[in-house]
Length: 139
Ligand code: GDP
Ligand code: MG
Image 1 (cartoon, rainbow, N blue to C red):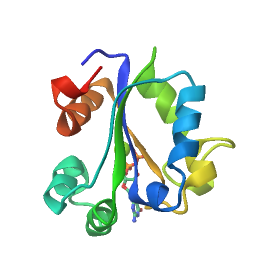
Image 2 (cartoon, rainbow, N blue to C red):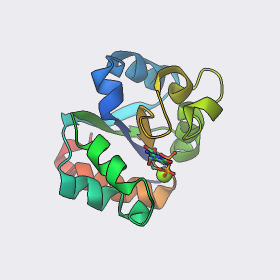
Image 3 (cartoon, protein in one colour):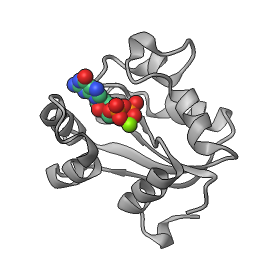
Image 4 (tube, helix red, strand yellow):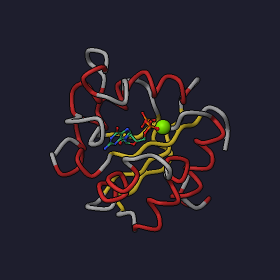
């Protein structure tokens, strides 16, 4: 995957709370092109694998439970400087610390249930995109 791409998920809380449309609107308005997108639900094994880097953290069980409790929207986004610009658009992990107008400030409810995921590096964007999409699903 080219380094001008990032990977995102609208997490189960964002979908449950009816924020899918508004979040996609923000993503479009910020100049990201959606090159792949689907609604899916992660299994326990999917979530444990996707978040393996956090498996020693005290919140890991809660995170896996949360991420598997309902459908998500998974997407690959394209834009210059995609990873960094998308992290700016979503805001800090804790919505209480997220900047005004960011997706998490607007739509997240807690540190755990924070509405969206955004890859933290080009390398992880490629790994995470490939986790959810095959080559023929990316346009
Ligand atoms: P991110 O890169 O901003 O998503 O944050 P991290 O990589 O640090 O954490 C991954 C995800 O784990 C976060 O987006 C949250 O959903 C969840 N998480 C992080 N810290 C906590 C926490 O202290 N408690 C709970 N319940 N979940 C957390
Ligand atoms: Mg992270």
